[in-house]
Length: 210
Image (cartoon, rainbow, N blue to C red; front, side, top):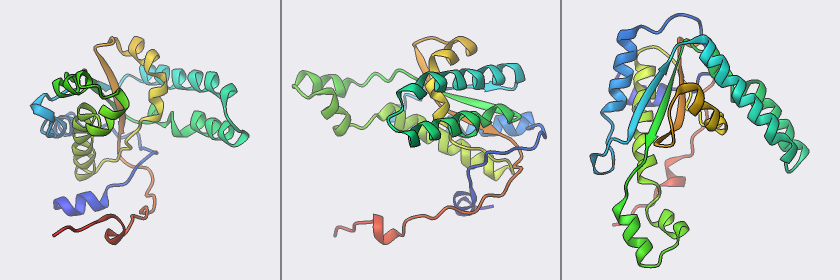
């Protein structure tokens, strides 16, 4: 499978067989993340690999509890119904994967941002001028791992919804404010074959200058 086949063939997988993920393959996946580019080569990532079923259940329970707290504040009945769907599946299916990788982001010390603040730029303007370089770096690691997962015959899904329970995850996984989870990647042999999602045509998204 060449790189272009890997990119075009990758899909978001939400149902997994209970076939174990080989440790050798898991190491290849994590190493792919390690080789991602990062701002100033800071490599602001670390990975927590979770195989413990009780811990995954505890994390999913924390997500459900947080959604229960959020639901009374829903802005419409439709939003409340969507939260119910998130609670039952979309935010919690990771608990059924053989292994989950929590991709953590460490604080990114952006000196350029501090200079812009001294010049009078607001936090909102700085974010517009320099859109989260630390998070972009970690996102590159996530994409590398997703492609490696697919190339090795497994499936995954880039999950950020469960992070509403970030505070509970800190306690369950044993880390503090020095880092945060930026994504969960459940990994396993796919137990589904979802259709290919449409993509915008190049003509819609490319502007050629020169």
